[in-house]
Amino acid sequence: MDKIYSRRRIRIPMIKRKQKQKRNKIKLLFYLVIGILIIAMGSFIMASYPIFVASCKTAAISKATHIINDEVENRMKGYSYQDFVKMEKDESGKITLMQANTILLNQMISQIIKNIQNQIDQTPTTMVYINYGSVSGISILKNLGPKFDIELETAGAIKTQVKSEFESVGINQTLHKIYLELNTSIGILTPIGSFGQNIDSKVLLTEAIIVGEVPDTYYNLEGLHTSDAMEVME
Image 1 (tube, rainbow, N blue to C red):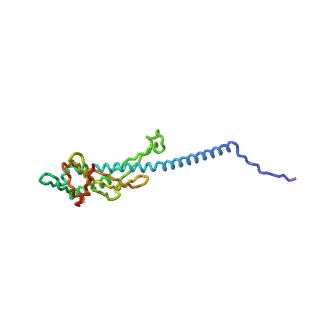
Image 2 (cartoon, helix red, strand yellow):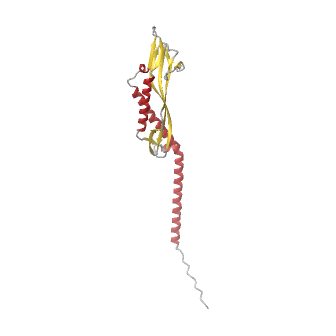
Image 3 (cartoon, one colour):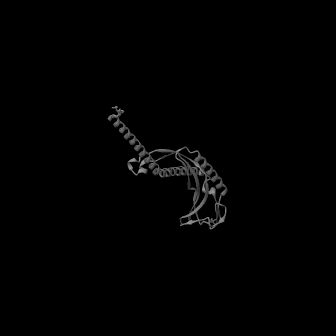
């Protein structure tokens, strides 16, 4: 009778099988943690990006407004209301004509615009801080969060318009103000991306109290003879 030979089955020891199961569990836990971190990071970026953009725009507006106000203030030093507005009176002292010195105003505004553009372009980086408390709504995290450096640059021509305003401040007294309105386009450069922001500013150039009746006709700041340029505010 022939013998039947069979190959001896090799069994994996129990301890090795447990080690393999343990390694598989560790890998599964590792992938699970990575997945949770990716989801959490994505959720944080989605939630924080609008706050980041808003913070960058707020910082840009604050910095640009500071530059504009300082430049106008420095440029107007040494000038008075009489330098910009010429008045003519009759024999009785009544004001018969008010006329703006448009040549001087145009020169001043051109220099102001040039200096504002240069200062914005040469401004060092500005720090923007985003706290986790604003993103998560958890107040205890308000002092935690990343910081970013942003740069500003003029993104286009600065548009300006001079406005004249009259306001009654007493009996036979009128306050005359001359404003400069500026619309400045700012480019905001950040590590995450770049975007723009329009900044509207209104700064006072000069003012004076006029004693006496203001004439009905007034040469406005564009040199046109019209009474529409005068707005009396009660």
